[in-house]
Length: 368
Image (cartoon, rainbow, N blue to C red; front, side, top):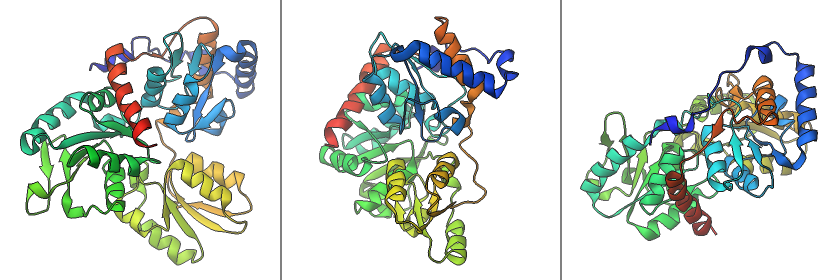
């Protein structure tokens, strides 16, 4: 798929928004939200900046926000997240709803690590090696084109919340699975289900080769795409050692996009929702080191001042691509919508959307 089809209305932020005061932008956004009412819906991902999330009509994970968007009467969905999230919203909403991404540069490095050409090549090589024993699964943090590929080949999407159920589902369909694009979520999930590391291999899409340390390829049950989250890969076992040394009472909770060694040494691991709920339900006075995106960690620190909360990596930066959605871009996007323009509209071609929806629907059925 040529991604240019999704960028046909891309424009740069006009200079006037770069010089607009904070107060004026807030005033303009507030007025547009009030005037447009139910015609406008603003979903905001957990990793967004506070200056943006304050205007969100709903906050949550990517799939949750896409599903909530589809339930709205709104004509305009101004999605405060990254590109693949807005794609999923466009796939699930109806043809009369228009999805806008305030800044087209808001991508996802993980999603970009698997494109359709690489995946087609990998599939040819792997099916030549393993025959009809392979089923593809993709994390929802992937492009519409990858979701469509998976849908075409009988596979499904997964979230960090239901990855375990979906891997179990996949093994009921086929002997082996190809897990895209995040190797860490795939590895951590498979290990939790009892698959040993020596029955896993990694597909390197750049070198177009299978990385396997075992004795016989026929023993391979899980093939992991060589991709990762640039944020979560920065949490290390040295970070854990430092917390254990300096904060002996502190519990460590991490996202399963972290490396295998980090997840193994942490006290708890789970999805963003799991992390939020665990901190919410923790007793006052408890201590936590959290291994996930910094905007969310800071929000949890501010929301739970009865607990001691730190980032597992004290030098962690927020997700850079998530942070591209800021107050100037949100103001611009909303004023464009208000004036009847569809600047930075995300529009997934129908054929891609139909196959991607197959993968999404299989997940919704398989994780029940």
